Image (cartoon, rainbow, N blue to C red; front, top):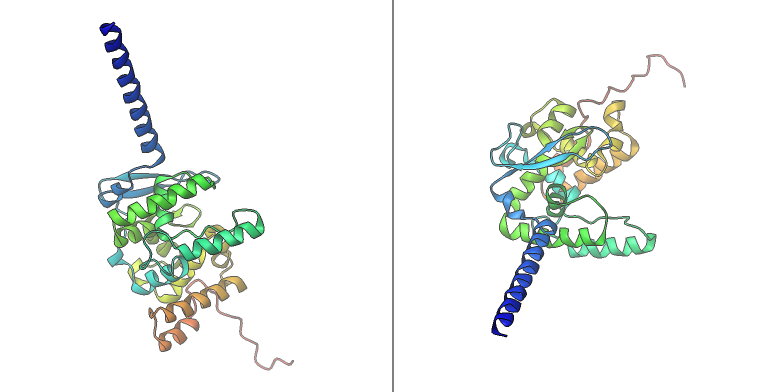
Length: 264
């Protein structure tokens, strides 16, 4: 009898241990260790059209990596006011934006608006699948809070600038600055930063302006709106705002001059 009880106890302990181990493995799979970002660098590998890029974490800094100190202040400001105005105030997610997004989603009956902060975008792009489900969104929120507490704003923003997509096969701010303007990130002016920020929601679609060598009406309005926000956030003075609003981007073609003597 005692032997039977002993064997039964061992089996119970083994089953419990197995359940704990299975649960631990499940949690590790569903909730990856985002604190790795504190000591490692995300690297994006383009895999061709219609395929998600491969993102991996490596210990050594990639050659293409751009540190936050190597990016002009106005370019950083343009991206922050466009993508995540409250970046330096929230703890990983923006409750007000989520509230507005839920309202919009319910009205349209679909995931019409993501309301993802820069932190959430880093979590999604580096650690999670891209599927649009409530479970993935919940994981994204929880892991964003964890990432903020363990890593901090500076490294999160730096990671974002180095993994963001700015066009077909163009990942990271260094590649984007060189592709669109033939410059390094430190050389970007406010309007160039606003242009890059304008591209972020859909870089291939909004890249039409670059391909046509002329800003579309949407691009022009959006860039101007970003510059206005930069002035409100004090990345630009009122005088600088006027200069940037009237600045021509390097890829824009000069407007054709009316021939002298032309009649109406």
